[in-house]
Amino acid sequence: MTGTARTDGGSRGLLITFEGPEGSGKTTLIKGIARRLAEGGEEPLLLREPGGTAIGERIRNILLDTASEEMCAETELLLMVASRAQLIRQKIEPGLAAGMIILCDRFADASVAYQGFGRGLGDKTVHTHNRLALGGVVPDLTFLCLLPPEEGQSRLRERTTDRLDRETEEFHRRVYEGYQAMAVSGEFRFKVIDATASPEAMLDSALAQLKRLDHGLLKYL
Figure (cartoon, rainbow, N blue to C red):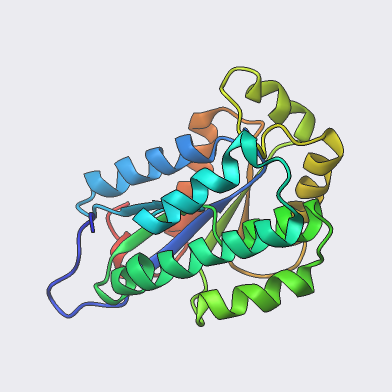
């Protein structure tokens, strides 16, 4: 496990997740926040979904492989949840117990957007399966990087795409609508980031939100 763990009996760690449609700049934002945290003396643990563990990365390869085009929606959801369960037990729960800041590129909300909205399985079905994987773990803060799907698909033309990237415009529109629904849900942990802005502006917005989070691990931001 990488990242800085507290050895002084300090407070529980922080789980900060990053969500958004394809091409929304999450990875760049995570790197920027990680850099600022490290400069303040808190080296975060960086994780991603699906993946983040040896088992999870093998599942990720199956999920994103363009050769898996015949995969049905239910299989996709169950594989996502399986990877998530492994990540939580192996990395997230120990990291939080050790007082670490965890930055995770996608988490349970991604299944709501992609399998619930995108695949049409519905949020209730997704929440039911997520419940077993999560074991009560809830992010302290979730950044929703909102980017219209048309712009996201335009950005994807500049990179090698995977199975989900190559989905239809209608699919990506439904995913975006799923994230929009979260943004207006009133749930406190959701913080919207305008992903049409520059990477610098996105980072400034995210840091401003983090500074409002009353937690000792963020005192040097």
